[in-house]
Length: 419
Image (cartoon, rainbow, N blue to C red; front, side):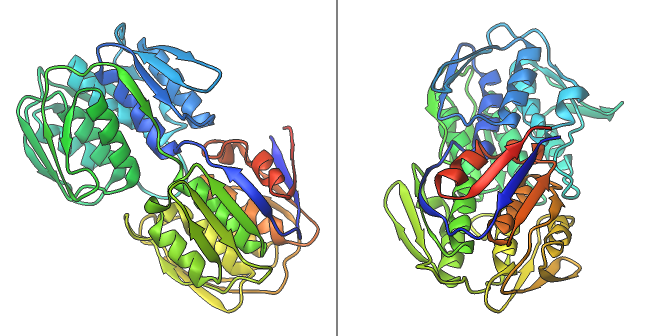
């Protein structure tokens, strides 16, 4: 199993180019199932989850071409299979996003109950109820969600809880429903907005994405087109924290500050000098140790759960005490036990972690437990004295494109050992 080895102690300094957003490209790839001819998707990151999604679409009969710029052309005009098998779905929770498009376009879908990161319960009932509100018959049996409908009908549906993938799945299904669909208590994440923009580029009529109320005017067909995925705000935040935790300066290029207000505010609170332009963000610590920050995760536009682990890593060597409260997932502190192996001072009380910053940590072998946790362990390794070896880095490859090359370009002493 591959490992990443980091020799800590070097402040990072330099520029890094941000890739397309993992959490936007996966639903957009699934949305190509709604079209009746080829869709071209640009700014696609080279990630394991993207490869898995392409395998899943290919299994259904979508013809896929990838060029040297990592633009993917997906032609769904020859789809023959509407079943998403467990072998592919179990590795990636986002696979459930084929459910709505398959049902809307072909009238039938069978999707295995999903897997993904071990960060707690993420029920699919919101997806099922939303599709039932549009007139679908849905059964869960034999480990599969089985849905059918001659044609979905527009309806009003209020999500019981804010759910990103639930909002995306029902929104995609509603694009081909007859009549008007009004979805309320919707997720407002930039990735939901990006999906809506892509759907509209394919001929859909989606309004209100980015607010808690989305209205979809059903159309008879969606066509092909070209769409570029937005930059990854979580990758951006991870590299900015890498600059902050090491007391360095990092300039993230080809990104969007307007999607990162809560994260940038916390970096400033930690003592970083933050400068932004239309497509760059610079964090400069001027050689200073960060100050501990307290935060509570919540749905966008509040602080994102996907940045919690990175800020926890920064708090381990910050001045003072930081209190982190996780409200989204109940099992998302597993990385903290690994950080204590480096010398972090951490106390966990339910869904709250109290982290008292220490002046130094020491490298040790540690193990990644999920995607964002693995990033936090690499960040901690950047400041721990000696060598830190992070095992199970297949998690990190699901969401970060060439992370060791990008960190190496900023001055990190980091290398990958093949498994």
